[in-house]
Length: 306
Image (tube, rainbow, N blue to C red; front, side, top):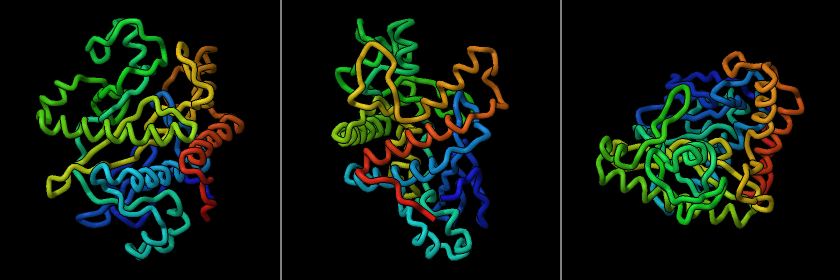
């Protein structure tokens, strides 16, 4: 499979993110193309991670199909052959699209990420360790790092085009969206997390936390959008190595983060662009993590796309 750092298709480019290009197909559909770009500490690396884009796309497609009974979503197809039949001008780009492109329905994105935390880790642990709170809301005392919450916690965040997202309270979200829509998004997010987590744990992966994104269709229907329960949008831990009271190994960019943290601690990088070059073994180890997460969750290896 060809490594893709950026797609350039004969469609209007709607936006380019850290990982994806989003193209306008027509008034009702968009095309999402996941590249093999990888970011860490909010900086996009110069070296791509082979097959990463296909993992993100095909794992999301798996979840859209599995969790579709929990509410409507924007997913139409992630099959390059079907996409080319729908958009004939893309025929010369079939191989570039294979595995990594997703045709979706348009929806106006909701201005908050719906984060669900099953365990206390990451930014939540940092805040809790300092003040005993999450988004300034008091949490139960005496929690250990990586401990499972008594029940999953709904923890919305603002979206940031660059830099870090910011945790906010449910009340702050309701002040913008209204209480009814906030409750709808919370209930959808918790149901998706619980169903997805149950499946993942049966396959040997703990989903410590994740973010869901939603959009509103022209008919005012709330759709699940973007990527779903991937190593980029979630914190995946190997179940057989889980032990509370410490940071956990993970199925995502851990080899990359570990390498960059070491470089930073030695004064070799200030954390800003441009990033340091990545050794081939770090790139290979990161790719292997993504592929293993896909295999465990879906029960099959990622197909060898052209």
